[in-house]
Image (tube, rainbow, N blue to C red):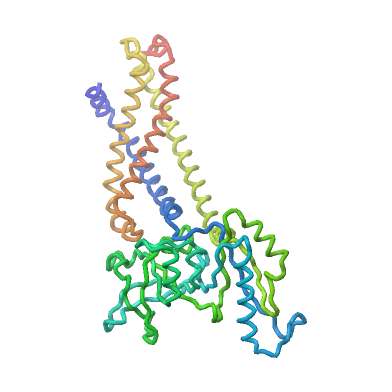
Length: 414
C-alpha cells in the first residue's frame, strides 16, 4: 500500500505541489501566531516569587493644618506623625483577622515602578557584581506579607531577622545568571548600592524574584532593602489577613474608626492585591483575549479552507474510490489511505517550513526573545499536530460522502 501510495503521489505531483505550498504557508503562519501567543502568555505559568492571595494595600495620609479636621498639639508635627502612625500599625497588628503588617516603598508588585539600582562589591575596586535589580524598600514583615521564599533553605523568620540586621535580600536574576552564573554565589558578599560607598550592606540570602506582573518575565532581579518603621516612608502599608478572613477585615476597617485614623494621620485606599493585579493587567488581559480570539478565528477559517480543498479533491476521486470498493477494499482501508496521503503531503510541507523558517527565526526572533531553540521546535511540532488534526477532520466528511456513492453510479461516466 505504501509503495503504491507514494507512486500515486509522485504521478499526481502537479496537483499535489499546490496543496503542499498551501499547507506550508498555513503551517508557517500558524507557527508564528502560536509563538506570538506563547510569548505573551508563557510567564503566566511561571513562579511569581510571592503569594498575592489575602494581601491588602493601604495608603497613609495626613490632615493639613488648614483643614477643620486638624487636631492641634504642642508637640512637633513630625513627632505626632511617628507616634500616631505607630499606634495605627499596632492596632492593625492586633486585629484578629490580620496575620502580618509591613511598611514599604515600592515593595508591592503590580505597579510597574522602574526604580532600580546595581550592586557593586565593596572589597574590590571598580568590581561590579554586575547585579541589577528592582529596588524594593520594606520592613522585615514584608517577608511574611508576601511569603517570600529562600532559594537556599532559610526560613521566613531567618529572612526577617536578616532584614532587621540591616542586610539585603536579592532574588534570582536571569540576566546575572546569563552573564556571571548563579546569584546564590553572592550570598554573604559585602556590597554598595549604586555609587554610594558611604553605606555597606551584606547580602543575606537569595530569594525567588518578585515579578512586577504576571506577564512580565523575571529578567532582572529584586533587591529587598530593609526599611525602618521609625522613619518616614512614601508608599504605605501592606498586610496579609488570615486565610478566608478578607471580608471580615474589610468590614472591620470600614466600621472601626480607630483603624482608620489617629489624630492627623489616617489610613485610606484599602485595596486587595488581587484588585490591584486586575487593574494593572487589564489592558494586557484584553490584548491576550483578543489575540487568542483572532488566532482561533484564523485557525477555524483555515480549516474551512481545508474542507473546501479536500472536498474538491474527493469529488475528483469518486471513480477511483468506487473501483477500489469493487476490487474488495473496505471503507476503513480507503479512508486510511486518503488520510495517509494527506499526512505525507503535510510532512513534506513542514520540511519546507523548517527550511525557510528556522534561518529567519535563528537570526531575528530567537536572539530577541531569549528563548532556547527547543521551544521553537516544540511549537513547530504542536503546529504540525494542529494542522494534522485539521486535515483528518477536513477529509472525514468528503471521504465518507464519496465512499457512500454506489460504484455503479460513480463509474457510470467512465
